[in-house]
Image (cartoon, rainbow, N blue to C red; front, side):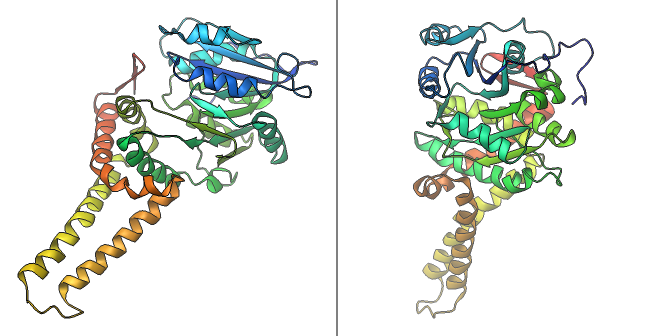
Length: 361
């Protein structure tokens, strides 16, 4: 990833007197099923002390939608709907949409958020205050995840517990450590920090532009804070199982550098969780009839219980409800397949697909 924006790239305008407090930017491509709820949750935060159109603005970038996305956005008063600049080679659609809106933004702070998010009342002002309190130029939240259907409820805790272990928020927020992460579903940056980072033009070809911006924030020392924020917003990342498979196929190999090793560990989980009780049952069924307390069968059962406890202790870090964590073992085979599939598409085919577009990986 380039350390600086090329001279030919447009630059975001420098801070000028009289700018408003915040610009909220939503890149949207075929989001008719969720955009309305997102905009309603944002528009509702306008009040006499923080008035939309006077103190802050809301920009929706319709990124070539073929559904009702644009008309839904236009149905909200005081929401500005933009079309992105022409998608040039080397740019992802999201980076292009965000960069287009950033050129129009008048806010002292810029919030990039996704169309599938629902924001809690007062979230916008609280986020700005939090960034100022901790003196950071970039603040990112990991939202509460809303899921439906068996496979989403079982798989998502597996993915998010691995994310929590790979990117512990306390380490990400520590300026002394190199580890960095951000979530594009909620990424707040001061105008000056965004300029220093080079904006989305500096990560124009990155599939995980949010994580790359976080690494830039660490390198250029603008200050980064990252945390789980169920108190601030929620999101339904995927509406269907097919969309979930496509999304994690795109992302897993980029999020976890040891993708195949992680898949092997999860295969071991399957073998232990399924194999140990079968071995114990086999010993009891075909071994001695009178089973003493401490036999190989009981020892196998104790090892299985310990492994089960270890598994659920890890999955609990996902911040998902207990019932979703309880059924997570059902999705272990699917998780292994997605890890391999993501590795193959990113590392072997060097291309991924998302929302009707194909990008080099």
